[in-house]
Amino acid sequence: MSTTTPTPVLSIAPVVLATPDRAVDLRLRISAPITGNELPVILLSHGQGPSNHLSSLNGYAPLVDFWAAHGFVVIQPTHLSSRTLNLAAGDPEAPLYQRSRAEDMIRILDRLDEIEDAVPHLRGRLDRGKVAVAGHSMGGHTASLLLGARYTDDDGEEVDLAEPRISAGVLLAAPGRGGDAVTGFVAENYSFFLSTDFSTMTTPALVVAGDKDSSTHLTVRGPEWHTDPYFLSPGRKTLLTLFDAEHGLGGISGYDVAETTDENLERVAAVQRLTVAYLRSALYPGDGAWQAACDELASAPDPLGRVELRLPE
Image (cartoon, rainbow, N blue to C red; front, side, top):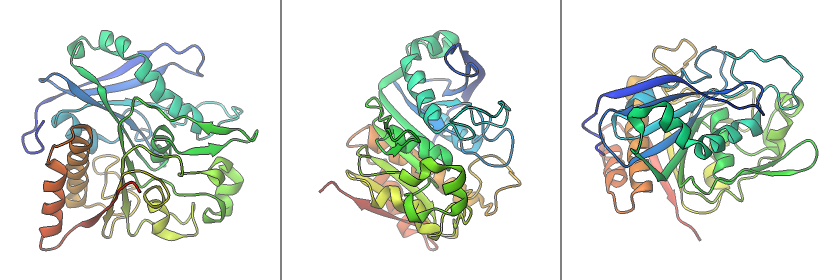
């Protein structure tokens, strides 16, 4: 894989997995470079913004296109929380379907054979031993669960959805801890956030946070809330703080998205390059892409952000 020479990309959607035990069948977008074998996989969980189609398999093209062009197979589900599904109220997990979202990703890994059958161009080209998960906003919460974070549901059960087949993660503007860190709106409407616990999130991860991402409807702590997955989890963790970035991190959820409050092409490009470099080095020990990307970031005349690393104790 190269972070400098992109490869043309093939993107196919919808790939539909029959899922009788789910409200609707699981619909996916699969994006992959047209050449190459032993390709690592990124499972991407969408956020939950006001636009209809960004919160579905149709969102996050700036990241998906770049990741696939640089050697990854990107699999995007449409979670049950998506506005595109317009599901009727009444499900105990509605409206965010916090558990179902993570279960979607586990289903994908369980059914990679079916996905390859549905996309013959992929057959035999996946490296199933190199799987990462990424997510933005609510998708970051989904990714954190798969990396080992937990929460307690309304029945008092601690929910453990850690997925051992996932070797690394990227949390983009992800929610932080619960308790007194969240607003009354969150406590009343999304009670599962109250019990978010990162103390069991041991899988290596890159946490990406904007230093202007206040998220005042979610937290009373300001931008630092989005760094909690870095500071409150054990194991090897990396924090990328983007200067002047708000919740859209420059516009990662789509091209020319009206709801992006901090549109910045250089910032998006930095997220593209740094996430690819991080995942290359995380999935391929000894690969120097991440160190090179960090050196480039730090040496820039006007750096777009800073990187911190915490090693296991």
